[in-house]
Each structure stands twice: as structure tokens, then as C-alpha cells.
Length: 425
Image 1 (cartoon, rainbow, N blue to C red):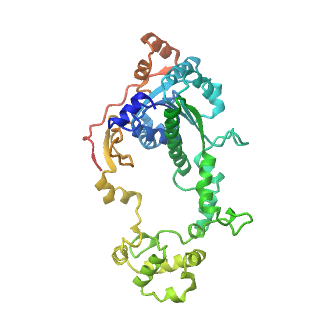
Image 2: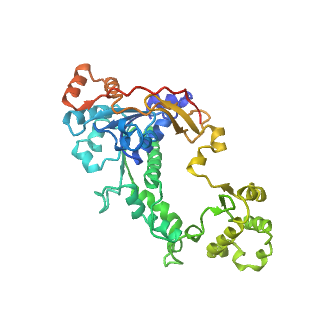
Image 3: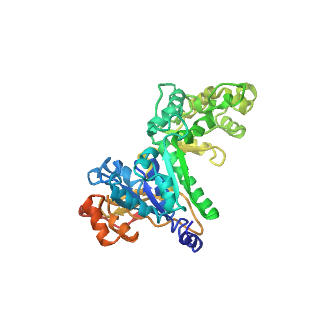
């Protein structure tokens, strides 16, 4: 950590204040990782190709490069446009890297080396640099050169097959970018750990975060199960997670999560539905091992009871202090959740170009070094001239880079929308 970062952490500033990150990532995985760094105070400089991150164009306002997916992954960053395929652009990036603490990339390593931006070259001029490479597969294996996307990793790790098996149907992908976002979150932790190691040793290092290998423990952690042992003591799949009856339960007027899991849970539930005698007469209920073996049948028993009363009746009948129970949200009802409203987690903020938006807060609470106030998601190339000037480029050098097409500033933004100041959602 730089002296500035250490000082910031000590004086109540954000935890990563003073850490400068060059962000050569696109789409979901890398941008989530670097937004988490920015949330905690790092100066994240998003290096974009002239056409910009592809997610800029997805969804409403994509025509001006500020679509909803991009807005959700790139707050508190500065955008610099550099054409790394031009020698002058690659040289400019090298100069910026000489003043950086972290370079984060999900460009394939071979492509980075072709650009002259591999770790060895950058570390030669900045040995304190943490070079974090997010890749599809470990570079030590036969899949090293493969590109990777979220769907591909869900299929490759067995997750899509498990989702289909658990639902009793065809293989399916989860309808969230679970691999991208999970690996981005892990990469955030790896980078912070590498910065801590640099504080101890005085030198940076190259760290590689592969999607495939990161997601394997997610899947096998639950589902290696009986195959954990050699020889095997059973088959793959944690039965409680694989049963088709593991789902939100239908009530008379909606759906609810009601988790009946421990001995105490089953005692309370069966008393509530007038079937306490089953604890003595039904061998499936004897203990957690027997319940797990018969979990699909027992979840069906719960389902048959829950459909007979309304959600409100069940939340009154089953003590929340004892039974985990929660009405199922839809995306729409989630926006009105009373807990999120009370904590201000979903907030209305004003973007100077697109106007009022809903964004999420930083999901952690700090007593001494709170997260940095968020700044608006940048236009493409909005900070190119500013960042180059800070890095010591002269006006003549910047003009030459602009003339060569190696860098680009922002186009004139659309007229800002007239919206109220930031308010709680």
C-alpha cells in the first residue's frame, strides 16, 4: 500500500484511499471487481478501447453509452480512452502503469503480451505493481487459450446440469451472471490480499484468477458429497439441494421461503400443523441423517401444509425467532422492501446525463474508514485529458496522442436531465 493509502486508512478516509488502479476490464467480472475497489476509495481509471466497454450499449440509454448494466458496474471510476493497438497508445499505458498500484485485466494473457503489456515488462519499470489477470482457465492447463463467458463456465463446472437435475428437467443456466460476479468478488479479495503482501514485502506480483477453477469449489463444495471419499461412500449431490421440492412454497395467496431443517424446526412446525405424533411414528424424522435421505418426501409434506393458509397466517403461526420464514419477493416487490428502505440500501441518485437512477449502496458498514462517496458513472473518455495530465504528459504530448488517434477524449454529452437531488429510494 502506498504512503497515501496508509495515511488515508489511518485518518478515517476510505480503506483504499490512495490506491490507484488501472482497469483494463470489460463486461461483468472485471468491472464488478474494480467497482468494489472504487467503492472503498481506490482511484480506478477505466481504460477503454475507442468503441468502449460493450455493456455501455446494452439496454435503455445504450445509445449514449450509459445502459443499465454499465451503470451498475462502473460507478466511482474515471474513463480514459486509449487505443492499445497503436504503439503510442501502448506506450501511454506503460507510463500510466509506472504510477499505478494495481493493473486489473480480463484481456487474455497472450493478447496482453502481444501488446507489449505483459507482467514482466510492466514490473521492470514498476516493481511495486500488482498485476491481476482474470482469465477463463488456469494458464497451466490445456484450456489456457480458451475464451470464457458466464454461460460457458456454468456449463463447464456442472452447475447448469445441477440446476436442471434439481428442477427435474433439462439443464439450465441460472438467470444471473453468477460465475462472472462470483469470480469478480473473489478477484477483489485477491487484489486486496496482494496489496497487503506488498505492504509487507515492498514488491508487487502477478496474480491470476481463473473463472473455471474459482467456480469448481462452489459446485463441488456442496455436490462432491459421497464421492469425497476414496473409495466412494455414495454418489454426487447433496440431497437437500438437489430435490425438486426445494423451492419456494405456495401459500393461499403467494409464495414463501420456509426452511424446516433442524430438530427444533421440525418440532415447532409439526406442532403448529397438529402432527406432533409424527416425531415418534415417522422414522424419516428421526434425525438429520434420516431426514436428508428422505428430504424430497419431507419437503412435499411441508408443501402440502403451507398451501392451506395465507402467507400472513404462516408468518404469524411460525415464530420468526425459531423458523426461517420470508415471503418471496419479485423484482418489483423487492424495490419496496421495508428493510432496504430503512437502511437506505436502494437509493435514488442523479446522474448528470441520464438523470435519476436507482443504485445500490456499498454492502458493508465501517466504523473507522467508511466507503468513499460514489461519483457518477463516466462517459466514454470523460477523463482522458485529466488523467494524462496528472501522469505528467505535457500538452504537446497529449495533442500528439490525440492527433495520432492513440487516445480520445469524451464527445459532447447530451443535455443533462433535470432531476431532483439524491434521495432515499
